[in-house]
Structure formats: C-alpha cells, structure tokens
Image (cartoon, rainbow, N blue to C red; front, top):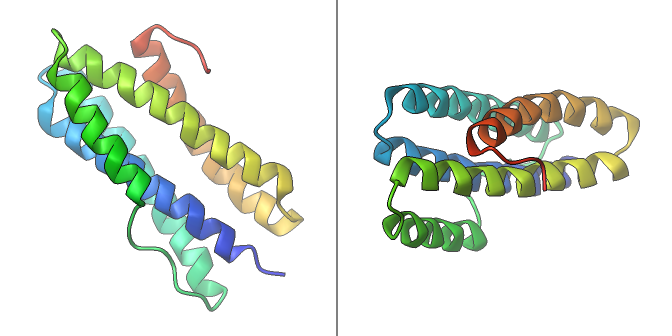
Length: 144
C-alpha cells in the first residue's frame, strides 16, 4: 500500500515551517544567522520537493500548500518576535521549538512506516536532524 497520503501531511507541515524560515530570514539582522537560515531553507525546499516527487511517482497529487495551523503559528511568531527585545534571538528560539514539533511528526510517521516508506523518511529525517541541531545549538536548548 502506498504511504503517499501520509507524505502529504508531512509536506504540508514542511511548507508551514518553510514559511516561518522565510519570514525569519526577512527579519533577522545578523549576517551569520541569515546565512544559516538560508541554508536551512534550502534543506526544507529539498525535503519538500523530494516528498512531493514520491507522492507524484505514486500517482497521487502532492500537497502544495501549508495548513491553517501553520498560518496561526506564523501570526503567533510575529506577535512573539514583535514583543522581543532581540528579534534575532526570538526567531532562533521560536524556530527551535517549531523544529522539535516537525521532527516529532517525522519520527511518528517513521515509527508507523512500511519498509519502503521508512527508507524515504530516514533520508528526510537525516536532513531535519541537521536543521534541528543548528537551531538548538544557537538557542542553547536541547530537543524537547
């Protein structure tokens, strides 16, 4: 049985996160942080594109948009960052928390995946772990 429908949920969540990274990239000031967010955006683009290709190859329509929850998280991020004394730091902490949630969703899907789907998800999970480590290192936090 194809797991492509489950990929669409992951794609939507990835699109939500990518939108947050784009928003953060447009607002942070520190050049090193801008570079890191740009790299993480490229990683999310690749992750989303790969999953969309798998859905398409399974003869299904891949998700192209995020979720309502993602739009709400975006508004909350704007509010939280807008009230912060240090916007760069606020974005790092917000993205780090959000990254935990995305990683958790992927880990849950991997735990329930068939062998073929598990192989696909492990590649994507490896990418997410890199982003996760970057953000938590900057935030001075650990996976929650």
